[in-house]
Length: 463
Ligand code: HEM
Ligand code: HEM
Ligand SMILES: [Fe+2]
Image 1 (cartoon, helix red, strand yellow):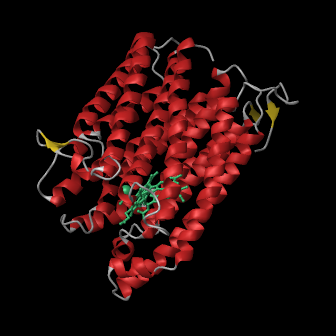
Image 2 (image 1 turned 135 degrees about the vertical axis):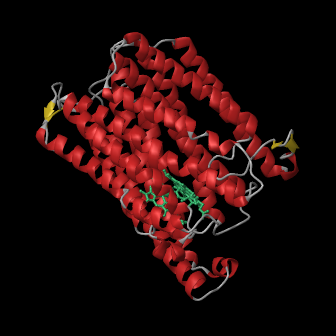
Image 3 (image 1 turned 90 degrees about the horizontal axis):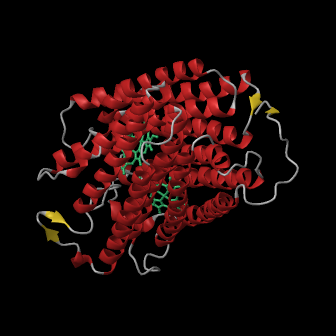
């Protein structure tokens, strides 16, 4: 680590990692509620909110931490203002905690979610971004301070690199796309129309741009690949992400009351979305093959796995149900949930984890650290996730058949499901929880425990 201010990344990582644990713990509760609906004092709706909101928030915190590491390094200067970064961190922690307490309160007393000045006090009810309006403003403020700090760092140093330019471009896009989720419309169609701008243009637009920039940074950091090579590929990836992803939004507009042309636009553009993700896989493999001096093998392992599972979870599990001809059968079933899990895991959970494994050892001054827990955690999480996703895909096929072909209604199908799907999901969920626990322990111990005999020189490898 070259700059003192890069340490601030650690605060964000710590909060992210703890929320990750919370997310998965409540995920297990949600899974058990499919088997025993009444086993927990908080009902499924609240548990589900906690699960998916915690997911979004910890990923954002992780990406912010990563940015605070990358920007000083790329600008070759200290951060514009460390106190501002610290303030932004603590303000976010307080706001997020307040929102979580609000959800729990609402779980015990649904009437507490009152209308005040035209907005709801505790929960706005738009999936993934349920936070109430007052929290939206605090989040927006936090993001503005975050962007300002990073832009000023870049501006003052006058060193504009492609990587940090793309990273901050992606983050600005991300911040702007939060806005369409902040106003109400009486029409459900319009409400959903704008809501997808946030959800879709985040994960298939802004966040993928950020992933492209971070992948370039990571490859450069752990191998001796030249900057101009990774940056060239990054531009190609990002251009393709935007070209396919923006109009790809149409794959959410098939059946919600929007004009018919979206069937064509959404089908064609979203079917092309896996291409940039495949280029990223190729980018990671090409770099690893041709540049064999690797300083952090575990970091490179995670970064490459991120590229692969981004392609499999988002690309493949996305493309199978993206054409309107298929989606009219599978829309809103467990097939969607299977894709949601693998896509978020591959694209963003592994992205934040790889950034942590690449930057945290440097922050802690522990270039040589024990990597065995990191690998074990990876395999527990990944194998469990693959089985969760296969189970959900199977459940989704049965659901599609019973609901859409046989014509049974939603509740009848739900009541007659084979319970084994949910039992398997819960068991693999526990496997996943074990992997996360290993990771959290590793996060806190990394660089703080004696290192076994590990090579001190960068090693030759063919990972
Ligand atoms: C990293 C990127 C991605 C993430 C994190 C992601 C995540 C998700 C999630 C969570 C949903 C469910 C939304 C809901 O609650 O209704 C969803 C829906 C969907 N995704 Fe993705 N996705 C990604 C990329 C893709 C790609 C590249 C494609 C296509 C090639 C795709 C195709 C779809 C489709 C068609 C739906 C709608 C399913 C339905 O009709 O129920 N996704 N995605
Ligand atoms: C990093 C790991 C995980 C990620 C990224 C993740 C992501 C998600 C997402 C995006 C959704 C909304 C999906 C949709 O509506 O289509 C969801 C719902 C859910 N997740 Fe997870 N999750 C993870 C781990 C887990 C684990 C370990 C369990 C427990 C077995 C779990 C159980 C559930 C349940 C029960 C739901 C509700 C599904 C429904 O409404 O049908 N998740 N998760
Ligand atoms: Fe989408």
